[in-house]
Image 1 (cartoon, one colour):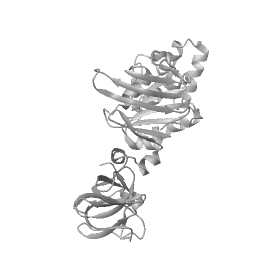
Image 2: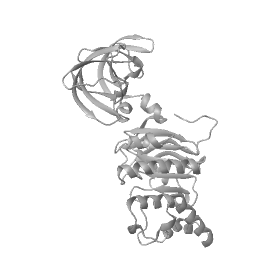
Image 3: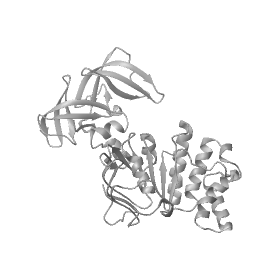
Image 4: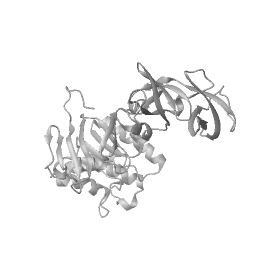
Length: 362
């Protein structure tokens, strides 16, 4: 997916490949355009190629083939320190022998910025991350969350137009991580910088990004805004990787316009939205989100289900059921007034809309 032709890409990967051994490609023909001021997350499992792409953009890895462009100019042969890119790593990479102030001052000294201007820029950056009172401390005297703020401030101190972040919140506990997600998002909005972010945490990607590039096997499987990825996955990998999902293997028995009739393995018949599947007789994977299934409703796709397990999660109950011989069918039931209480071992009726059930690649 490219940007509008009217918008010139600020960052562009043009047919980029990367191999470490000359045989196996870890990045395969990558084409990606990122607009100025956009927050794009590269999301995927370990070994999918996302970090390698970030490292090529930073200049720590070289592309085997293709061009990487920044503001329309190829940067393949420009060393990392001359690309003017801010970088935040998971392990913070702060200099332990320097104070916080000296850590932030270092990239400014490299850029030959005068002392009084340096001091102002350091304090401005610390102020941005609410760490102004910590300029004289050393990294070892700070908590993990404080060190991450300093690493963020150091990436922003020289006012770069592009900031790269590699799993920056991976070492923090859940509550702090969620807090920092919003802080980074707000800083991005306030400063208008372009951010390329790498994570394997899908909720982080959905929370923060303008668009998410889902990587698998060295390729982008889908590039879209977060709600599109979740509501409209284009293939079975994306459907499985983003959010919780019920999947069925099925055979297509008829086509009618935008829909297909299917025989689900185990005997159930259903109608699904035709997204990425073959014709009559071909195999397909059906994808259905747990919150899209209704209890005891008369929908077009009705079936009997047996309750196997109930897990109370506060705002909703997670119900595991047996449907068509599959004992891992999940339904999320809102914990709301007027909802029927389910009992383990009992049977109930389920239904779902055909539009919510996507027929994808087998």
